[in-house]
Amino acid sequence: MLDMPNIRSRSVEDYLEAIYVLDGENGTARTKDIAKMLSVSPASVTDMMAKLGRRGLVEYERYSPPRLTPEGKRIGRDVKKRHDSLLRFFTLLGVAKGKAQADACAVEHELSPATIRRLERFVEFAKVEGSLAEDFRRFCKAGDGRDG
Image 1 (cartoon, rainbow, N blue to C red):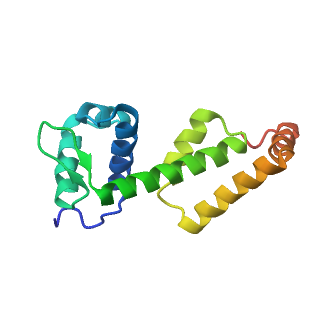
Image 2: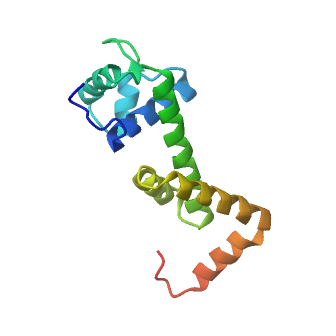
Image 3: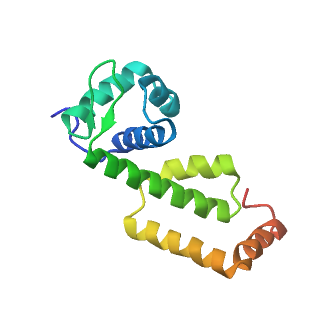
């Protein structure tokens, strides 16, 4: 247990989110699918599954797909929810889908729950107000090209 002092590191959250997403999509999260999703080697996945197992976040036996414990599932779901909220926000701003996806991955671990809640509320507001997002996109398009 000493090999992973920060239970909520970015890496831990990425793995738990990947397992959560793959479980939802495929009913199971195979090592090779986790490796592909996170762009890591299958050996790295195996090492991390052992660590997460020792931390009580996954149930893992070598050569079997990991299963999230209730705590692992809660963390994976929370990270996925933050990611989705950020993706909706960036997309609302008119950020291209691929860039919005990458940026959501980059900041999903860094923002406070209060900031995420505020972003979610803003997205809700913008959708209710309808033209707010469109007005903003037109404003950016008419700008001087500095906001790539």
